[in-house]
Length: 219
Image (tube, rainbow, N blue to C red; front, side):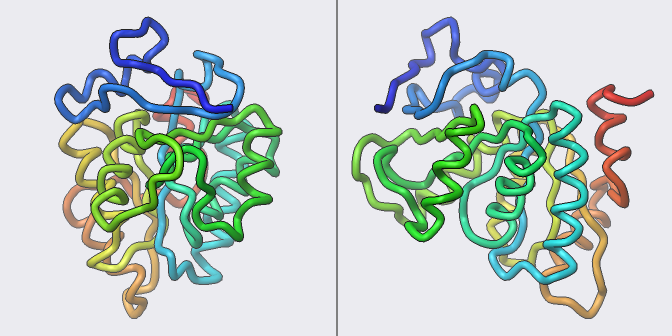
């Protein structure tokens, strides 16, 4: 059964509240609430058209990062989001899925097993929409601000130039958060977005250590 957290509640995530007018006044969640899950969050987002390279790289990076105790935040869509959530679960780590739909809806529906695995492994499902609200084009963008807002940094694994992952990265920049990007092939459409981010100042990631040092997990 879903619970609700309002912005005036003491347990409302501090980092999310810091995004000011962008912070949701309330959100719903499923799972066992533990304040520690919000202490060190990394958003991991990527193309819905994830390549085999993108999937392998996501699995390799997230497995090590999640195993080190960093919470993986993503948007539960197929492709990059799914790879991030599932890799965190398989590593025995924590993950938070921010939904673009009502808290009582699983979208996409065929990821029901992943949805349940997140909850069974002490993760959280979050949405600012109640009950059976169906996802809209604009609600994905609204979701992206929460994904970025919960996180100290965002890692973009693969993204085309019109990818929603770049929206999440832009929110991260606006909120003063760190942006990491995975380098890819210059001939790949889903690498053009990450290459753009790197040109604009995102830090290149080639191994989990690059991110773990930022979270001070490693010296």
